Length: 133
Image 1: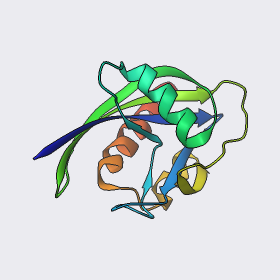
Image 2: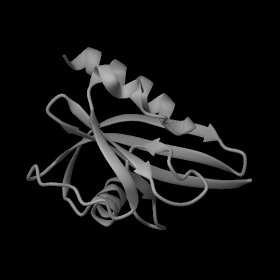
Image 3: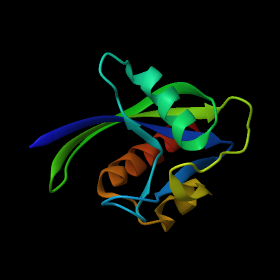
Image 4: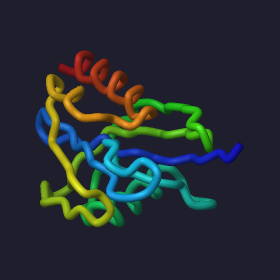
């Protein structure tokens, strides 16, 4: 079974969090936190900075580690390391790989159709919000 290790950015702006909708591939139209694969010899935070530049054309601060999610999809096993981040200059994102994006509040996090692995991230995010507010 193929194993994939990725990083994901839970980008916070005030009391909202960025969700992105996949624009391609097997999981097209599913909602996720932006990020991507870690390249060989690349550390997690470097990968996250690179992936967010490639996907959203913005720079981020990587703040708190949120969680690591492991999920067995039908064709691969995913390990996803998730970090709370923020935009450095509160600049506008540019969707380079996604077809849509939404800023969600704690109360609207469940309003999109999350990809299976991201459901566990949403749960961890809700606990993080409760603990930090």
